Amino acid sequence: MEATKTARRSRQEWIDAALEILSREGAARIRVRTLSEALGVSTGSFYWHFRDRADLVESLVRHWEEVYTTRFIEELSQSPEGPRARLQAIAAGVIRQDLARYDVAIRAWAAHEPGIAPLVRKVDQRRFAFIRQQFAGIGFRGADLDMRARTFMVYYSLELSIARQSKRQRLHEMKRRLELLCRP
Image (cartoon, rainbow, N blue to C red; front, side):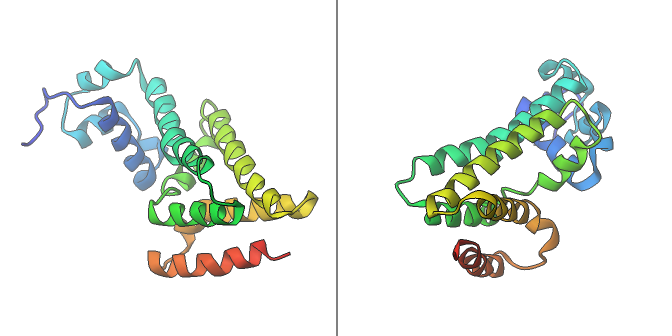
């Protein structure tokens, strides 16, 4: 069924559309009119769910935090696996589930949108702390621990934007990369 200009979209559909526009066209294109045209609805649908663009922006970043960080960390925290297996699960999850899909766009946006920069920093700190905890569990300490955790985090946040390989190839290299990072 084709949407009409009088139809109303769900809050989640607006957030998903905003994420897609952000990743393809950049933050400047996240406008109520642009989104309503992309969704094939009137701007009234937007105001049914959001007070204003700032409300959408905050909702979008909080959604990114919840789906691409919080749920994943909570799931892995419940795992009986050890730290090496958790690191492998993180890397594999990022690749298989495209968990870094929006990371570059979100970070570029945070550089120009002061309201979201603190939220992005919070996500980065949470991710880093969890990854650092895994490397500490393997036995790394001090500067060596921090370097490994940063290398892991930065690589898997940016890999999708720099690696022009299939998921299969990326998963194969992931194992070799983890061997290097986990080697004393």
